[in-house]
Length: 316
Image 1 (tube, rainbow, N blue to C red):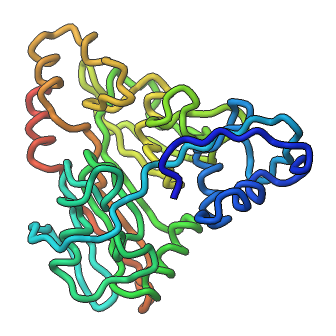
Image 2 (image 1 turned 90 degrees about the vertical axis):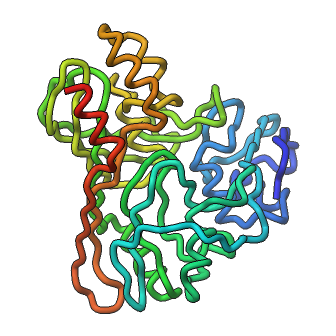
């Protein structure tokens, strides 16, 4: 796996080749699928711009490839309590707390949902690899709420198909800065890795990055905030946080995309309350999908965790 950023210049003999094919030939440890995903996620730049996997190279093109650090090889079983909402022979629905990473990654080898899953369950799917047992989809570290986990490969593949085909209903509760004027809105804007800061995602122009679709409805307005019900049709990295920040209403407590917005809150008490939240106000409250074996439609809901409910009471 590529551990350090690489800079390549296209020679005359490579001119005309597809970007994904060229990179796969240069890095034997990367599959073409992995290369394509890296390009779509914005981890590859051509002449300092995001390109498509099908881009035809030109002599002299400069390619920058900067993949995330490889995750831990071994997964440690850890006795971490889990809030199991539902379980049967094929799947598990978990209510993940804020502060828990879904699976090991760069610099994180323990304390994750995956570490807890291998302790509590003898059988989990292996489709996503050894360090992501049963993991069908993810939530950000500071996002709480519902996740579905697959116990076997058949269930994993069928659930993954539903996510890919946008047949899974996902509804989040988000508190954002400012008063959102519209009762309902849709955001359709491509998301990819930021060319300016490779650790962040960003809305990209045109067809760069990957398409992303977010729908929101106002649940309640406060003096300084708006409570939203947010539905996502796609599942891009940091999608809700990036999209809401893009329209000028970042998620409360989001240090990455909030831009220090809490500093502009007039009331000093509320401003301090935001600064001590220690997470962002985003919760996966509803998850609905078709059971991979029985074809029954399943729907699960979970209320706001105590710290978010207490926060709302303080700013009311």
